[in-house]
Image 1 (cartoon, helix red, strand yellow):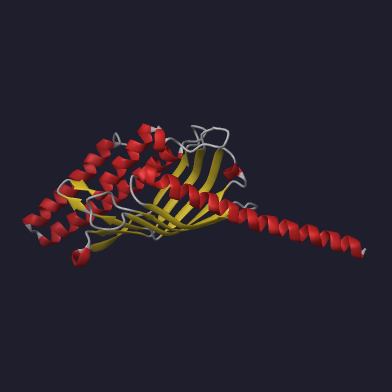
Image 2 (cartoon, rainbow, N blue to C red):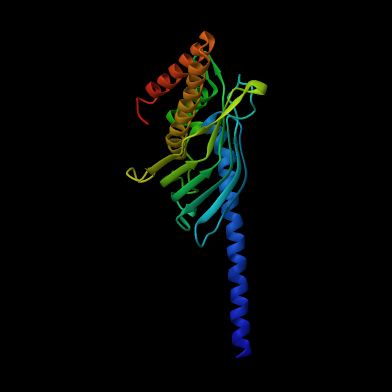
Length: 251
């Protein structure tokens, strides 16, 4: 009986050790993937500080995701996500069709800079679309060792308690951003590439950033009534309209 207990004990220790090692392994895959392909997709600095995923439950956390500004803008970042929780179909991350059941992002930070009708957000979106349409060379979708393209499916994406900082320096103003929920990204297609997923998510989120900034500037214009502020509001609204045209009017 003692030998049986000892055998079970050894198996349990090995199993626990395997789970710990695999959890670290999966987290490392996610972190390495983001840090490698993120800059290719956005055309900017992208850094993910850490990631952890449980191979048994599929639940995980990513922390410290920074997306830098395109060249020519003042702030060192356009987007910062302190922490995001995700639920992945167990072990799908090891295959070529990764199923993400849910992503919940809480308290993300966005920086909005504008010059008349151009903005850092619009430049970032252009970079993502260019990388998605290119699909060759460095911008080619990630693939498995067997050469199969890795495809993603996100059943629910939710962003809440976001904040948009308009401008930089002492004159910057921070305003709240409405929550965003997206569902069934890549489900109908049987999975989409990382580039396509980035465009679908970031396109929608950054569209909301522009709308939030335009609304805030317009409100300031109503209260202040100055010609300069009214012109800034018109420019921000124009940027939002251009973005909608840029995506064919789709949200």
